[in-house]
Image (cartoon, rainbow, N blue to C red; front, side, top):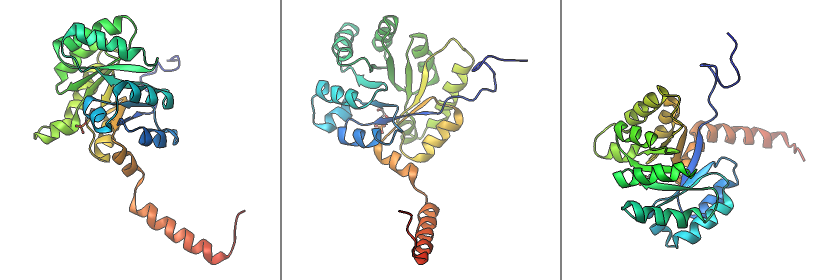
Length: 233
Ligand code: G3P
């Protein structure tokens, strides 16, 4: 049987998207220059850590990164969330509004999604919550792996459950954004499960490059090269 491009059940998915989980503009600039960065996520704690005003820092990030930049509301009540979302949305067209997984947050998610705004639903700790977010039209669902591991649960199995559930319903367009990633294994396991996106702290992105055999092999190549006395340019 012939399939149109992208329709084959065997079609390879596009590569996992990498977002960085920080509000530090210097780190974001450095990562953007590598070409690996597809977006940014922030949260109230990361904004607090930056010591900067949210509107300024989100505007600056949006100038550096073309992909979605998640800016989180701080209100907990629907109308107040919508008022904050209106301010955050005006910053740039690539702002994604981040809302917590609460009844009011999902109501705001539905309203914002209906008007075409990308919404990242955060603080997801169960597959049931992820199903609700998809039904509310979320562009992204953010299951927190590390924080589940911290309380003795299995964060990775939540990613597996959500990927499996969403795959059963092709109408669901919500992307699984693996969050609260603490080390490279979290990222690799999430990629094996088919998570669409991972938001990764800058220190973990740096760890992704490292392997002792790469360092050892390079040192040996450089030693042997030096012995030849040659230069390429
Ligand atoms: O930004 C949401 C999430 O990635 C936070 O991670 O390390 O604070 O649990 P963490």
